[in-house]
Length: 147
Image 1 (cartoon, rainbow, N blue to C red):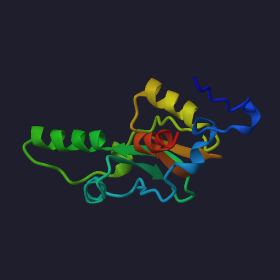
Image 2: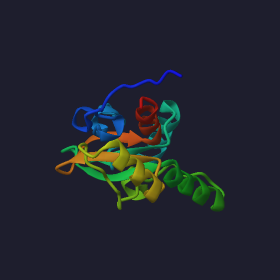
Image 3: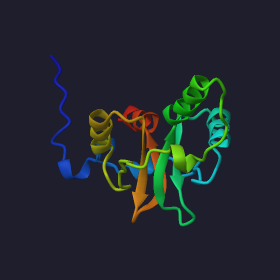
């Protein structure tokens, strides 16, 4: 019988992806909306880019909200209810303003817990109130697949 022995592994020298910060995996070139943009233009941008939502930022790149497909669908359904689809209104009127954010230095494992506990598909990543990236569930799965 052959036994394989590798020897002791020093724990302080081993870094797993779960120890890495999300900044290595988040998207930094983020499609964003301005609150004055028309809701119709925002819908077209979501469709064209095949994304389900995007952060809303002001002129100083400070995060002020999120616009999701759900926010857009509410406007479409409201228009159908009134027997016409409206294309008026702004992103600022339809966005979600109570946004949960994460910091760029949290670990991949901590981010996974956020996704499981919050049930969101994406988290804006902020530093000092400014948007620095976006972390999606897909980004996190890519990080975990490298384990």
